Structure formats: structure tokens, C-alpha cells
Length: 475
Image (tube, rainbow, N blue to C red):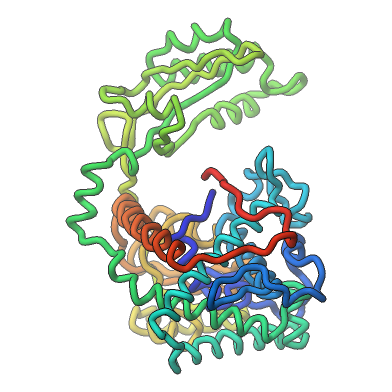
């Protein structure tokens, strides 16, 4: 759940493109003219307390400053990126984006506002460190950098026009009352300078293919998973479960225990309800964690399918019983993710009717790949490679990873508040596990670089503006 530094550096690019407003495969999309221009997430307004102090320094170094208005922009941009990236998990985590972040408990000691502020602070600190490193090398933004910033601002202005409001009104609605055009330009320049420095170093992060093989061979636990069934039952029912020697027997015992103990509710013991509860007892794709007793047990050498583990009883006298399941495509219980990542080309339209017209003309014309490539250049498109299940909106993911969607397949999908996509599937990318190993190596190298840069170019926080500075949050 914690966004690591690799995600942060991806976010730099997202912010440069103003992800909350630009039509992009990974963004939130422009608003249509008939939409409420004030529509936003409630929590986004909390980053600034008083607009009249918007130029108060919040974070600063020897050569850079982040004012309160700039931090408001960073906070809101980060928050939007976060809830877009993790949209499918927000309900599970208990975050209601229609309500204020303050008061929604994240962990026992923190609420969601404190959590998001701490992450936004950390991002701002690392942005400043990267920008300062660039300045130390006498790096200046060149014409292409400035053109990229101008393009991002122009797209913001287009979004404002499409929403039927002025540019300044749109910025305040999207990013908070303290944010204006000057704020956005300052942030984009700071972010662009940080990105220039990162780009000058990024080739040093990418591992050779042999390094990926070596890393996996040395640390397989980091990239493997196990599946299991687990259920918490009264102590007197444990023996009925531990006597099972197969998945079928364990499920049958679970069914009996659920029925006998009325887990399904006092007045609802229908077969559908019981089977629904049974399905919730399956836990898939569990990775290794040093802090988990069950993980250490599951990853022990010689562990076999249908092995059973029982936890210590709770104060209420309940014991959690685990049964390991066979791994995917292996003889034991541990497996790596061999699912291929996906590659595709796309076009994105604000107008669904226009998308349908273009799509029909392309299909009627023979649906040639070369013709689709031409459409991507004309209609706000491009190519996305090595896409994972969690990278895109769920509407897109459902089709991309559906059975039978292979090279040459195509479709049209509308995503609410974003637009209508035309998608053309290319050949599969690399296996997911290999991408995970590569990402792990890159992230370690980025972490090392950021530790060194943050130490060499330190920054300070202002006291009194926020109740929280930095919070240590477990993933």
C-alpha cells in the first residue's frame, strides 16, 4: 500500500503531464462541458488551511523552496494519483473519498489526512533534493523542457475551457483555493528540473538480463507466492480441520463448522450464503514477509500441498487453521508469476460518438495494424508496454487480461470521467515475475541514489503548519 520511490519517480512524470486533467491512458481525464466543474475529492481541500498564507515556506533547502500554495498543488496531485492507482482497494482500506480525510482512521495512531500529508511531504522533499542536485551541476531547463511545461499548462487551460470556467477557477477547483497559475508553473518547473536530473541517471538503474537471472536465483522468496485456505474457528472444532488430507475434505469441514457455528447469520443459512463464505476463505498469491509466522512456515523447505498450520488461540478461544494449496504449475506450493504482461496501442477520445465513428471506419476498412498506428498519432494515443493488472482502470484490465484476448484483437471501451478508448492488442510482454525482479533491482538502486542525494542536499520543514511531519508507515 505504501508508494515506494520507484512509484514516486513515475509520479514525477505524471505530475509533469498534470495527470488529474490530461487525457492519458493512466490519467483521470478531462472533464466534459456538461460536468460539474467543481467536482473533486473532498479530502483534496484539506492540504491548505488559510489561503492568505499560501506563500509561507513549508519546505526549503539552500537553493529551493516549496511554499504552502505549491505544497497544496503537490498534495492534491499526489492524492488524485494515489486514489486512481489504488481505486480497486480503497473500499478494502476503508477510505471514503466523498468524505474529509481527517477522522478516517488509517492506522491506530494516524488518520488518512496525516498519512497523505506525510507522503506528500516526503515526495516534496525528494523532488527538492533532485532539483538541487541538478542545480549543483549547473543544469538549466532547455527549450524542450520548457515546451513540455507549456504543453502541460495548455492542456490545463483546454480542460478549463471544456469545463466552462476560467483557467484560475479550474485550478482552484482541482487543486485548492491557494493554487493559481503562477503556483502551477513553479511546481512544473521544479518537477521538470528534478526529472531532468533523474533522466540523466536512469540508465544506471536498469539491470542486465543476467543480473535479473542472478537476483532471482539468489532471492527466490522475494518473487514467489503461495495459496491457501484459512478459517478461524472455536478450539473445539480445530481437530475436524487438522484431520483433513485434501482440499475437498478441508472445504467440507469448513462448511460444517460454518453451519454449526452459524457464521452465516442467525436467520440466513442458505447454501449460497455458506458457499459465499467458503470462497472468502481462499487466499491467493500471498508473498513472503519476514514478520509473518505463517509466511515463514509456508516458505520452509519441503513444504507440501495440503500441509496444515494452526495459530495460537486468541483470547476469545479462536484458532486460525491454514491449509496450503498446490502452486500454479509446480509440484510444490511455491510458484512465481509467469503471467505475461501485456502490450497494446490505444487511442483516447473525449467524445464517445466520435470514437465509435472512427472505430467503425477502421474496422470497415480492414482493421489493419498499420492503420491503427496512424490513428494513435492522430487521436491522442500511443503504445503502452508490459502492462500489469494493477496499472490501468479496471474496465480496461478486464478486457486486456481476459481469456482469448491475443495479438490482433481490438475493442472500444468507455471509462467514466476519462473517455472512450480504442485498444489494439500487441504480442505479449515479458513474464510478470521477470518484470518484478527488474523493478526490484531498479527500486533498490533508486533508493540508494535518493538516500545519497537527500543526505547531500538536505531540506527543512516548517514548524506549526501541520500536525504531522513524517510518518513511518508499513506497506
